[in-house]
Structures are given as structure tokens and as C-alpha cells.
Amino acid sequence: MELARIVAKARANLEHGEWSRLWQNQNVPFSKRKGEMLVVIGEAVGELNAQNSAHLPMAWNTLYYLARLGHARLKRLIEEGRVHSDLSLREARALLAEFLPGRSRREPRLQRKMRLARFMQFVRSSLPDWSAAEREFVRIQLLQLTEEIAADPRQASIACGDRDGNGLEPSNGLPRSRPNFP
Image 1 (cartoon, rainbow, N blue to C red):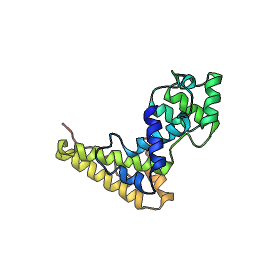
Image 2 (cartoon, rainbow, N blue to C red; image 1 turned 90 degrees about the vertical axis):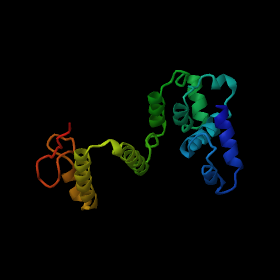
Image 3 (cartoon, rainbow, N blue to C red; image 1 turned 180 degrees about the vertical axis):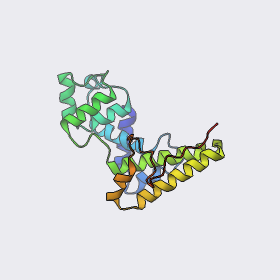
């Protein structure tokens, strides 16, 4: 909680553009995204008194969802006993969905970008360990995927699924090709 208060105050005191430049410094012990989450927590939760703060969960990601409810609503939910120190992340998300429908999920565009970035990181980090057959299989599948992405979006939804519903059927009508992995 104290870290969230400090980060929120620090951001409030920075000039335009300084917040982004701060994350270029290699000495910051957490990511910009976590910093932004801590700012939200610090702004909404930072003014709660010690008695109310004692009823909050310790996990910063759970606190983030609660902080998005706003200071006044959060205080009321603590008083009603709906927010307590054992509150789970799932329960915090449910409260946000209840009081602010549509804000409980990340923006779909951001979510897609984050998933793609994680996938790219996975491929790059595991690529040296792949066999030639695995590399070829993945290359073919990714080429087919890029063709689907480039195609008319109205047609892409038809091409993406297969009879089993798992999205592994190639859109070219050929049977599934699986490499012979050892």
C-alpha cells in the first residue's frame, strides 16, 4: 500500500513525458504496467485510514481491481463487509463487473497485443530447442494463419474453426498435417 501511495504521488509530481522516460531507466524494479496499476491503487486506496486498509487484500493485482471501483464505493463495500482481507482476485473482478459493467475486462485490442507479444516471446525463447520437423510444422501453420489474417475478415471466421472446434484444421481444405515428432 505504501509503495502504491509513493508511486501515485511520484507520478502526480512528474512533468508531461517524464513518466514514460522513467521506464527507460533500467533501475526501476518493476514494469511500466505495474507502475500504472500501482498509481490507480495509490489514488483510490491511498486515502483510506488504517482501519479500512486492514480490510484490504495484500495482492496488488486484486487491489488494482478494487481500486478501479473508486474511493467512495470501495470504502462503502469495506463497511458492508463485501471487501475483506481474504478477498480473491476473482471476487474483486466480480465486484468490478457488478458495479462498473464493461470495465472488468481489458480492452480487447490491448489483450490481443499482449497475447501476441507473449506468443512471440515463447517462440523466440524455445526456437533453439525445436527439431527440424517442429520448425517446419510451425512455419506452415503460421503461414496459413497469416493468409487468414490477410483475408477478408468475414471469411476468416469460417476458415478459423474446424469440425472439432479447436482451430487446427487448415483453411486450404487439406487434411491436418502433423510432423512425426520423436
